[in-house]
Amino acid sequence: MAKTRVVVVDDSALVRSILTEIINRQPDMQCIGAASDPLAAREMIRNLNPDVITLDVEMPKMDGLDFLQRLMRLRPMPVVMVSTLTERGAEVTLKALELGAVDFVAKPKIGVADGIRALAQDITDKIRIAAKAQIRRLHAPAPTAAGGAPAAGGAAPAHKPAAPIASLGRLSTEKIIFIGASTGGTEATKDVLVNLPADCPAVCITQHMPPGFTRSYAARLDGLCKIRVKEAQDGERILPGHGYIAPGGMHFSVERSGANYIARVQDGEPVNRHKPSVEVLFNSAAKVVGPNALGIMLTGMGADGAKAMKVMKDAGAYNLVQDEATCVVFGMPREAINAGAADEVLPLQQIATRLVERLRSTSGMSLNRV
Image (cartoon, rainbow, N blue to C red; front, side, top):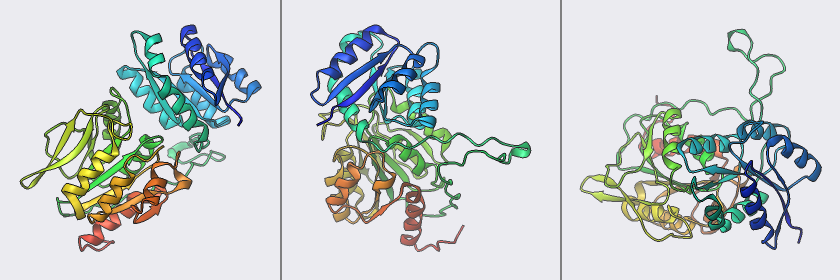
């Protein structure tokens, strides 16, 4: 079997050395080069043609994001970002995922050497996933002429944005939308949420992310979406028109308290190797929300949440699953389909529209009503 060929890009000689050592210990991968800055990396990539690169976010000579943007536009390839556990590191990492990085690893600010060695399994797993991921070319934004119209010759967007969705009007506050996602899911979840109207039912989300990143992710979504988006807090009431994201490193589920739904955010053992786990959220959806739940499974590696999504369906929920063509990694969606959990399998760009159609049809509303 051919080994996955990796180029490491990091301005720290120590980090380059440790990452090279970790990669070369794996029987199925090889570090074929290590560059101290993006300019050296550019030549290395051109000459060595790696399968995957690991890329530090902050480096000299050229910012890691600038380099990533050029790379994904001119020579798209799988990239795993190496980030710092800081607020700025989280924000830059989210931008990197938006630009097309497959995933990221968060290195600690203190004790970097020991911290990276402790993450060896995580790093190599993400390199393996990245090597198999579907990578898309980043399209340059179209130049604009006077008045804001696209200039002649401007690059076309990757796909047309979905048409604005009209208000849902009065819907049952009993309904809740549940989303599970992993690799590639930060952008996929965003694509669903930005196309939901402000008066949609509550949305509960478990995205596989480590501690320190979900708060920035929630803030970013809150600035882009019509609904309000925040990290879930233990004991808070779950309200329509709001999105709740499982905090990194904590399990998220829903409970009933009288007439209200309540968020339960708790520590605990990983489930399916994950914390937060989609399985935990979806099982609570089946138990507590039943036929008033709508499930969505988005891109991700592994099988987390697939069995629980089938339990949701058996309890009367209606489930939408992202199709293979639009997934970065068709792992969790495939497992959900194989488990018999999917009512519909759709391209990512159609999920929000179909979700709203389903909500209207089950509420006795005309699809044309505004």
